[in-house]
Length: 142
Image 1: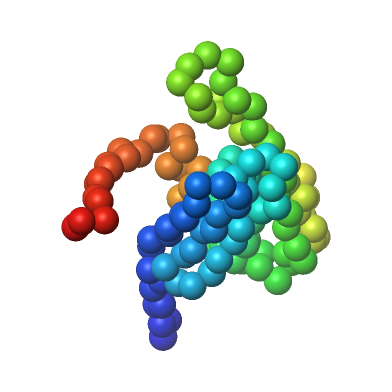
Image 2: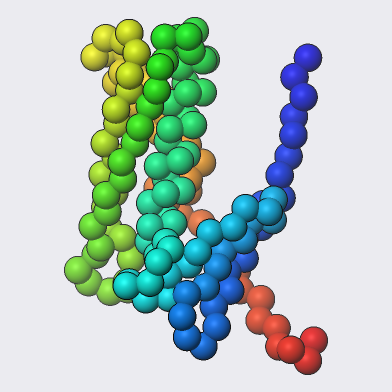
């Protein structure tokens, strides 16, 4: 029997009037948010790239297990690079995902794992399809 464990799906960011900030996941993980490019911590674009890279490595492992190849997968790495759009609004126009899949796989099997990972990855699918962003404004008086 499979036990499904859920995690909180919220993440919050905090930033003072100057300096670096922080990111905190509802599950408790924290990371430094760089307020400036020279600050330690992740920039928002690096967090976005990290979300895609993390989703894809997990998705390759899921795909390998679904294909019956889980024991053959020794490791997987994904490096994400992005190109910002030259026109407005400010956004990323393109992502490049470089996969290193270590294990006893043919080139065709590696390609199949990559294709399956893209079908599975929620982050990549969200980027490709777009998502509605809803804002809720509140003040200290609330």
